Image (cartoon, rainbow over all chains, first blue to last red; front, side, top):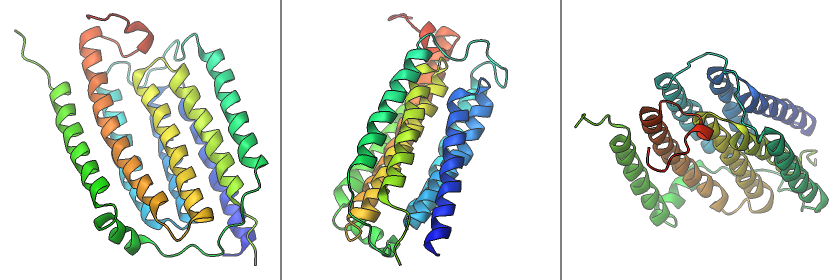
Length: 167
Length: 105
C-alpha cells in the first residue's frame, strides 16, 4: 500500500467515522441513531486495520458492531417510542454541551497537533499470535480478572433486568 | 518511503470523536442515547491506544492488550447499563434522564 493510498483511505474512513458519529448524537430518531452506530464502529475497525491491529479490528466488528449495537437496539425496542421522532430529543444543556465538547476538541486537537511526535515505525509487526501469547503469559491476571468481571456483570444484569413478581 | 500518515492524524480524529461522544453523553435526554455517547468516547480512547502502540511502541503489546480489556469492560458496562435502563423504564415509565429525578421512586 503506497503512502498516498494509505492517506486517502484514512481520509475516507475518518470522514465516515465523524459523519456517522455526528448523526448518532444528533438524530432525533433513536433507532436511526442506533443504526448509525454501525458505520461508526466499522470505521473504527477500519482505522485499526490501517494501524496494523487486525485482531482488534475483528474483535471490534464482533463485539461492538455485533453485540453492543444489538443490545442497544433491544433496549430501544423494549422501552417506549420506538422509531418515533421525539419532540425534544436533547435536554436544555445542549448548548452548553456543544460549548464543552468544542472546548475539549480544541484543547486535545491543539495538544495533539502542537507536539512534535516521533516518526512512526515503517512497518507494523504481525501481532495476533503475539497478543495470544501475551494474554496467557504476561497479562494472564488482567485477562482472568476481565473474564470474572464480565461474568459478574452479566449475572448482575440478569438479576437487575429480571421482572420481579408482584408482591 | 515515508508515510504521509502520522500519529497526529489519528489523534485528531480520536479527539473529534471523543468530543462528539461527550456532546451525546451530555446533551441527550434518552438514557440509551447517553450510553451511545459513552460508547463513542470509549472508541475514541481505543483509537488512541492503538495509534500510540503503532507509532511509539510497536514492539510492546500493552496498547493492544489494554484495548481488549477496554472492549471487555465496555461490554460489561453496556449490559449492566441497559439492564438499569430497563428497570428505570419499569419504575418511572420513561427513560428520559431529566425526568428520572426521585431518589425513592
